[in-house]
Length: 118
Image (cartoon, rainbow, N blue to C red):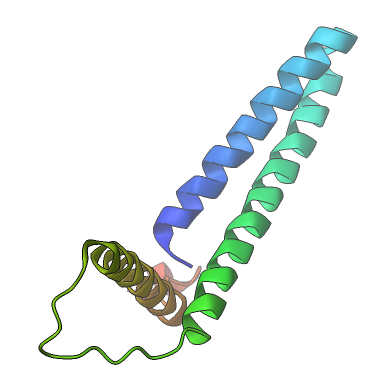
């Protein structure tokens, strides 16, 4: 998964914590219970936004796979409407390529005992 997506999940989890914490503190006036509800809200928001992002990425990849191959004529003059759709398809193609590269690259992360071997 791309590193930028991790920050998105952290941010959505924080928003969930703040929302659930403040709402339960306002209703119950119990700080300890509010921390518990805030942590549940953090998990709920981060997992829900993760599912939303995954479904959006799958939809983009699915639509790109099912898109027919358009063969352009070399001497054809593009119309203004086709230029917008070409820019959109290039953006979708770029997004799909970046998602595939991000999901296929695995970064080497140091193991717990690696610092002992030095």
